[in-house]
Image 1 (tube, rainbow, N blue to C red):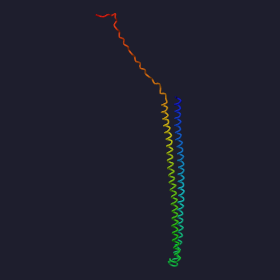
Image 2 (tube, rainbow, N blue to C red):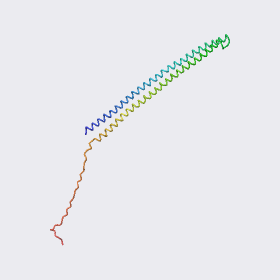
Image 3 (cartoon, one colour):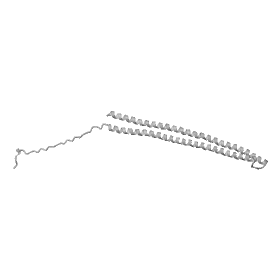
Image 4 (cartoon, helix red, strand yellow):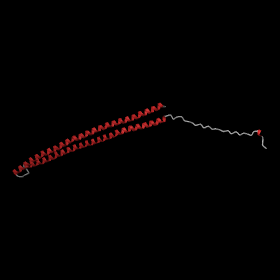
Length: 205
């Protein structure tokens, strides 16, 4: 009986230890996932930051284009003023008509290029928003993985406690219940003897 109790106790200890070890193993796996998600979020944020440089470059391009078109407009406007001063203002069929058409086309080209720059900025900012959203999602996944890591350790200890409790109950049931004591009740029988009068005494008149 003692060996059986010891075997049950040993099995209970092994089971409890195994559950705790499993909890820590799962916790380590979740922590590794959290680290991976953190690195992923960091990478997305870095990509979003890099796109800031592209947005700044597009802003500078827009400024340079505006300056270039402004110089061209000033030259064409100066030419128009010069031609008008020489021959008077006569738009139809004159060199001024050609210059005015060129000026109009210049303004149109400037507007188109400015629109293209803004469209490029919009697309880049859209990519940037996607990177930011992906980074936020990875950070949330990392937080959930850390919570799961803590829950795994708690589950391991909880399972070990339940195993220990079940082992204790089983061991208590295996113990020797002892010897029952039976009380014997002895019935004493008392016999009363009635003495008869002796014949020697005679009869009293």
